Length: 174
Image (cartoon, rainbow, N blue to C red; front, side, top):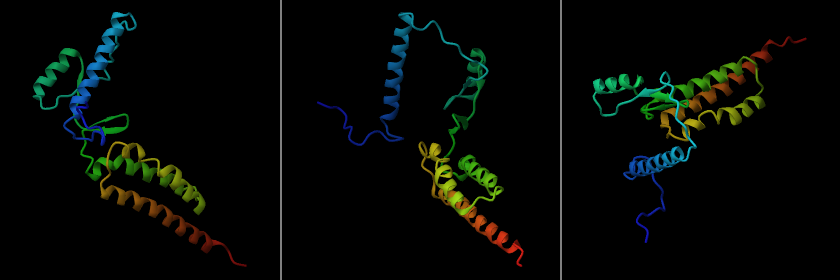
């Protein structure tokens, strides 16, 4: 007899998510203890200069006290972990600025090289379409972000057409 209906999976914000996280963490903890008992681990090094202590729903003074006692820095939300914002409101356009800025930077680098239409199409399809996938794999982009990214793509193609017309107008006629 099954206790849980597993047909749809667990979604973000599901009440079961914290329980599953704690169950997995407890299993990992048991495996680590077993590895230490069997001599597979002899200790864990902690880089205190790279470590931060965060308090969620805890008094700031208590977090600072604990961080000082362990030698950690006090962290604040949002922060960047593996290139992604943690604790940011991803429904806001500002939280997506790194993706948009990366889009615009890549395009400005390519504009300077006078890329042909076929080259621009290839760049947009292969590179620009993959840039935000890392973000999209964890966060749902609000419509304003998708519109902005599409606007950047369109201006890239439009700038190429203007550049070609300018080149055609500067060719001397005999």
